[in-house]
Image 1 (cartoon, rainbow, N blue to C red):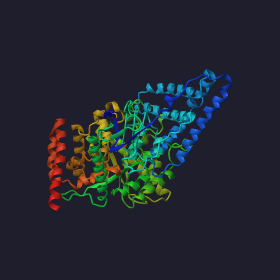
Image 2: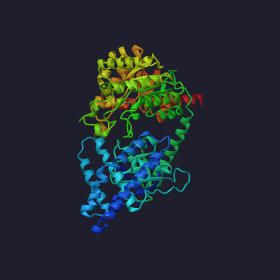
Image 3: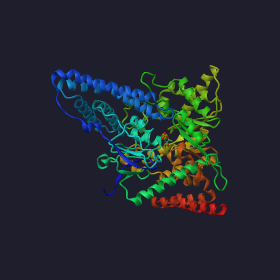
Image 4: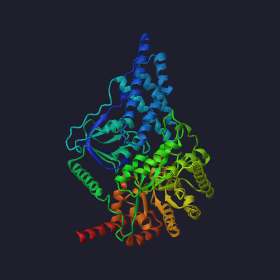
Length: 596
Ligand code: PEP
Ligand code: MG
């Protein structure tokens, strides 16, 4: 068969080469027939038993989750459990069997189609994508009814890289992905999914090359076809020519070698060629992620997204984690970091991180009661979190970071509540760091433009480029329809970034970047040239960024970036940024020629 290329949405980077393993969608295999009246109760029981089996399966997967499994997985599995206990699945299909006398599979598919159609009309892309979760749960039940397990063959060994399997499916549930993880599973592609689908989120955290939104890949690709996933480009090459295959194998080997080499930089201090020390910090979601941060040689945690402790909670528990629960988590992170500072961001829920999907009612949640706005409206909950963080500060260096601040009175109210939390702890004789540093996320354009009022009141600033771009360019960061407009190099973004870094430096207040821009090696030199000295990113990106820093010379970069900042046209900005890479590439060639 001739080679062809499929285009989709890249969700995680890297190259995977392997044979296609098609996961058939059980829904496609379903037989439709009417049952006799006397079979009704037996058929109802068959469906009930299948659901019970899936419930058990989910329970086992949840209980067997490896400790290092990403936190979201447990939440996804819980969500699937919840869907499975909803009357729309537990009651309605049984009634369809009773009243319409459909066989169990047909009754289930009918109801899932019905519920799915209702989701299509939902405007919120996050909620719309939850349709996939319902279908995935339905698929699981169907597979039990049909007696076909989610089978994935064990790869034939080999070198574990080239002999591995690429899963091709209409859709994959995060729980299934977890089961595949221990096999030689090199990557996956799916017809459905956007960048915000649960499966995409899990793929990113597992670091597996993957592409979603491939439309009808599961129809076009045949079992055992040779596939290349180019995760950087979001493409899949089916049956590549020997030449293309050889090129990709070379690229893949080079990437693997580069990764290994980077490991050697773990203990190398991050210092530019002209001798400027740069601080590289890690972003973490859960306390145990601190292990990965330490392994990557991070100088500390620049962003602990505490909201993940609040999300996907077992419904039998209280809505918010208690002070003791939170204290244990913060203490764990700070203990794991062994004396390196941990910046804990207070609860940033809302928008694309709802605590409870059902509660999200705002038409425009990104502009709604999010982050500090929510915390100030729930002072008891906020005080509980502040006390827990403060108590943990007795066990190692902690900084407090406040998200989404825009107004001076919000800063003042927050500082007032922090003082109140301190007073409560003093009263009960609990220890804490009375001098704890307090900083603001600069992620609303208004904050970047009114920086003096932040500098006056706070100890440090951290630029959240993910939201700063969303709010400056008016682009919903989770909506794939406008994803092409999300541009970190837009002149307005560069202006705001440079402004915050420069004003912060002038005032002698530390400024870091903790949004995704900090971990993008293509932007490292741009940020260095603006004067940034603190970067916080996912631990997996840290060593590659360090390598860029080691090859950068600020005496050259600073005037070059000044020149870029004077450009008004996007094309000249892009050319200038590309040139930064070239200059340094030449420079590092010179350095290695000089020193061998
Ligand atoms: C940001 O907005 O850049 C950021 C780091 O925070 P989050 O991605 O959690 O909103
Ligand atoms: Mg943010």
